[in-house]
Image (tube, rainbow, N blue to C red):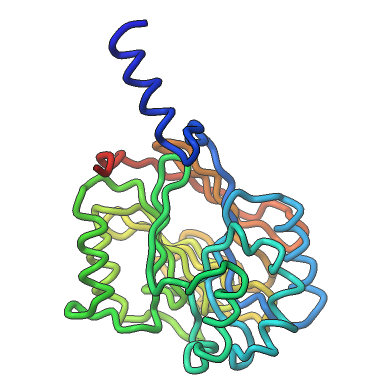
Length: 277
């Protein structure tokens, strides 16, 4: 075995827990505003579970107030079975009562307190879990953590939080207060995923960073602004979620309706980040 081949083999052996090679492909699903009673959210949740994803990103909102009872009644039947692979971010509906609903639920499911922000590596990408409901200005702990997290360089990162920085929706629209996190990610990530706006959106890249909105999880849908030039694709008349296929250096993003039918497909490539010591 050549020295190069040996180095590659060693790197692969230590790239994942237990000495197993890190997977070279992963399927990730993301949706928000989906923990609500009804046939549409039930059908969408079944589609996501049937896909057997490697990761599930819940983009926030367990209605109406994110109470312990609402997590048990609205979230658990749909997505509780995916808890072991779920990365949740809180929505505005559950944030005020987070100590009575959000934190106890995830502590019980995961056996530990859900961190306020975190990152995990999957198939050559880093998924950066941020929090639009906690302090996120330039002087905040979250902002300082993010600066450290992306300091190594590269842009094979996908960040997610509840309220989108940019949105063509008529109900909520843009969230200018999210600018500090968005700006810190420019040149260090390729996509930001959000819910909050109850529709599906793929906006045109801004500074190399693309905003995806996957908030049509089952709540009453919100209308998109006709002719918004920032919108590359959007739908406000269907429930659906975002399916992402990750491979080292590349990602495919697919909006799928509640039955799993393809609505929109896009792709991104990225520059790898250095290995962490």
